Image (cartoon, rainbow, N blue to C red; front, side, top):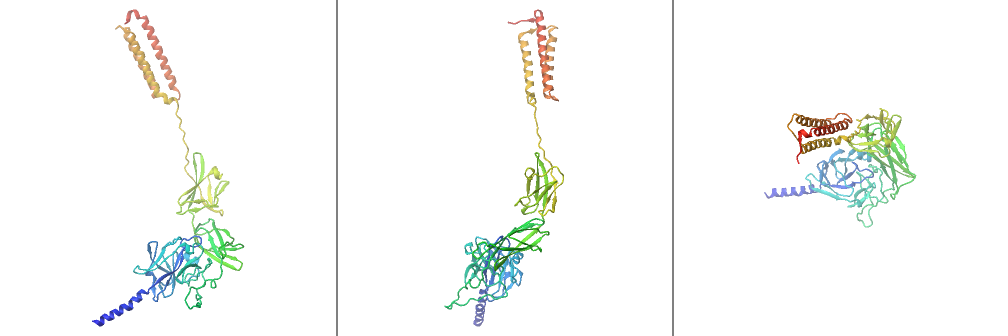
Length: 487
């Protein structure tokens, strides 16, 4: 029994060191590239143990998340001492570093330019190596990376897949050939191990920067600008710029324009030369098909041309032309149209004609992009209200009040006798008054046509006055026989 325990203990003692020495370390960080960082950042790792390690079973921890690692180039088993690169997008990394032929793992991450903590975790999610970096350490958009040299992190020339050699001079040239062995520092006079000196090992270089958009439209105008910097990170003069746009076209100049005729992703290379020094830089540009529409509208008697963007990203229509008959308008520099939005160009600004039915949108090279369509015309409607219409309701009560007052006054002044002569007069007076009032109301509420109401109302008033005067004359003549006055 004791022998079995001894054997088990020996097995444990031999096994524990094996697992303890399984080590993947972060050795280089490219967190802030020149120009756009989108899908171009990368991290270099190294197997610092004496065992083969299947990196695809490990995890890369960043921004509070564990990211999986998938081998997209080379073997997922990393031998002792070997390096590998973790990239955001394989195509972009290959475009920036076409000479690299080592192991590449793809992962989904986004490094902060202000600094953060990166961790390599093993199959059991245990933290094996952790690195915290800040922009103050270097490598902030100047073409350099942060590298682990002699146990310390310093900024230097990028060396993906090779031994790190820190350099104080910012560079962005391609990495050195990987077929040659890494230089070995000479031992110090004291016999101790020290970090290699960068000055005698790294030649002076110039740095190249490309400024352009990552996306352009087929038939559109892509804008490319180059810059070159010297040893002290100052702009160089008398520099020759040679562009290769990846579609067989080349151009020369610091600022050039290029049009892609077909959709696709293109590797653009800029080569610069200044005296005895030269360098190159690479970017990936994607040419996509434009999804635009053109229409013309008339709103409140003011015309305008409208360009619609049906893409899910903002587009630049600089240099495009709207043509209407014999007139045309070239869209100025930086004429952006937001994603799934529109841009309105009033005729009073563009000077375009609205008399023709045919109009279109052209690419900067003059090729037809889309034929315009007419939108529904919107016309303002003016409504006028006649002044006399507002007074119709007021007139009718006045007539009723006057008729009632005359009738009441007549009753108070005289009490007619019950004779055959007086009864018909009272009935006639009341009947005529009611007829006049009814006629006036109908004219006020049911008038049809221009100015009929004022004349109808005036005729009714004259008839009412005439009737009252006739009744007064008649009553005066019959006063002695038919009317008794009351004191």
